[in-house]
Length: 157
Image (cartoon, rainbow, N blue to C red):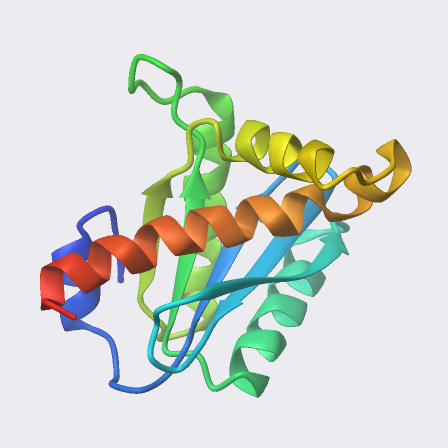
């Protein structure tokens, strides 16, 4: 199941299991993981992109190891809400993932998440090199946290 509806996604989730958040870049994939109560997103590692199959296998292996019950993919919409080539690429990636797993997938509006992650890392006084290494996983954390906050409002937690 692939959806942009947080309510539909919430209904498909198993209780007390974490979610994995993904920020799909052209060269890397940022990964974040929630706690089991789905209250806090923690940036994880950044994967270098290769081809779809090995990338998907690595991501699904991480999700399985974490016992995750769903995936949240950042959907890079344009500022006016329309979808461009990057959003179409993300949808294609989500479709490919859905063919390999039964985990529900939420496409989450990620406008400005990388900008916010970059600002936070600058404020934390990280070097330019270190920022480049972690910005995608921090962006994945911001994407996942936004989805977690929305899910909490929907479920009243």
